[in-house]
Image 1: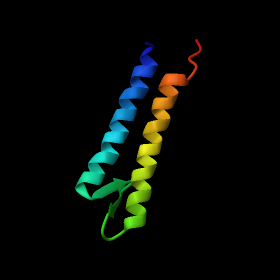
Image 2: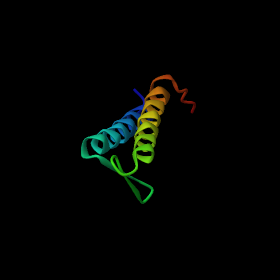
Image 3: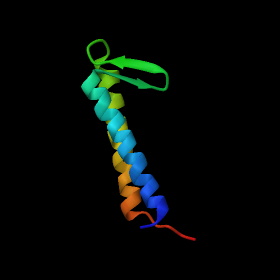
Amino acid sequence: MHPYRIILLLLAALVIGFGYYGMQKGTINIKGITYDRDMQPFGFWASVLIMFGFGIMLIYFAIFGKITQ
């Protein structure tokens, strides 16, 4: 496996883990703004979905992406 693929998978795990941790905690911090699940539900869930979507995209690129040299 190419080292770039490993890096992408590690970044995906980090991003998805951050989103999962935010779900468990009930707050998530994105770009310096903290969203609380009870006070700002739309911002909170939108941020969680963006984190999971970005993680899934990284996994996709790690598996199906072309590496040219």
